Image (cartoon, rainbow, N blue to C red):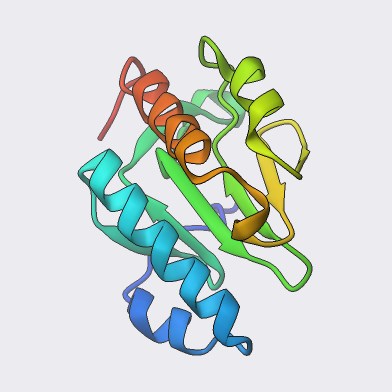
Length: 139
């Protein structure tokens, strides 16, 4: 079985942020890095070519082989900021209702721009994600 393509790399996060085409997107990325570093206590690390992750945990992959993934992560996509934060933590739905303009997927929160979200509520969501992941096996 092939190894997962999305793995930690040595690419500097600062280089990745600097390469973002729009100045607003660069600023949003740096804001998220600052917030998540503060909340998680973990440094920002590039995972693959486009995901900025913080910390690591393992989940059971196919055939029981553990797979590493960031505790919390985000990616600045062309159309939105994708945050990997929806872990089903207590109070998540109530926070999402107060967040502002957004979309969700199974584990992703999508924001067209950071300014669409209430920053205090978003920080609560980030903290809720990190707290819920603390109960999982962290490496």
